[in-house]
Image (cartoon, rainbow, N blue to C red; front, top):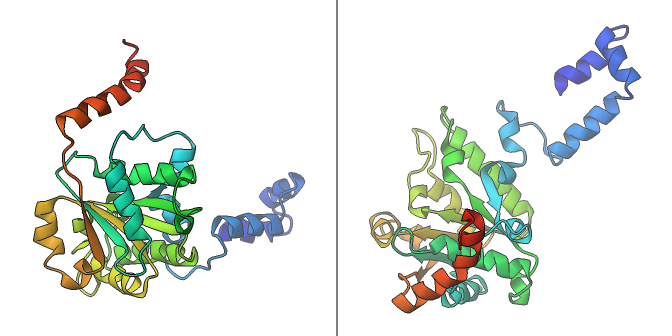
Length: 257
């Protein structure tokens, strides 16, 4: 954008004249750049990583629910209600879903997103959104010291700016202990702790019981910010109900009956 604006300021330049003929003015370019960056100013060398970080490194699950991009959630009402109750507390209001791989922990969060989208939640959760943070994308390509930390700080800045309207969801949350840590920088857990302590961040985590014991329980300052919600394997009866509920959508998808 800086180069384009500089070229537009050159009198007699063919490219500048062409842009002017198309109705593209310097002010219009500045307005578009300002809109894209959300009013944030350049403070780092790696500028674009700081803009619209939530959209870049996360997925808006409530919007996905409104757009009918989430599959049907059968059962798990008890776990969803537990999460709602914890989120509605004044303290220790960050649920962590604990269960075996593939048991349906993410489905619980998606179920909550669908309830928010349909206004089937208490008043304190209405109009909120849930952003699923992709830790893999956040870490990927962070080659230099402090680069991961900078990306996460940019995400948290947007969350703080939303003034409590954003709930963050991190799957495999045990990975935040030590994530991105390098000499002279903090890991993700230590970056999150101050915001959790001040109540500036609402966070839902998901992990297995083994990973929780191995990583989360050892970090007492982090663990005490969370309330556990156990997600057990469905019973045989519940499994049959889930399969019956999913059968129609699967038949349509695969073209079978």
